[in-house]
Image 1 (cartoon, one colour):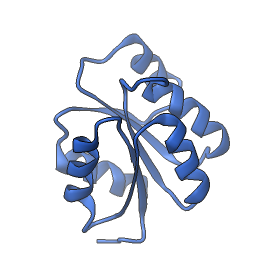
Image 2 (tube, rainbow, N blue to C red):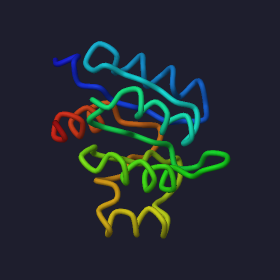
Image 3 (cartoon, rainbow, N blue to C red):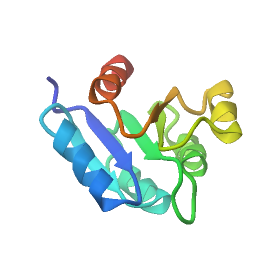
Length: 121
């Protein structure tokens, strides 16, 4: 696997960040952020990031709001949403507008996410 591929995972729950890192750290270079605001800062520090996966429901800024902002500065990154809920109108619209490539359901499926990252690269 290519550990030079940088993936940013944004989630306001530390346990989810820990699980994500544990599952993917041997395959990719994983960076994490606990909010959309922190996610934007991490992207500034890690411009080589190729994939961003964000939780949908976070305090302050939703995953889609974060991705819409990030996409302005980083149009070449592949963005994904992870949600513990069914698809919402907001997620559906983001898919239609190609703001995100697809969305994943929690608890996340490791193979599904790994395949999406590999497709993106």
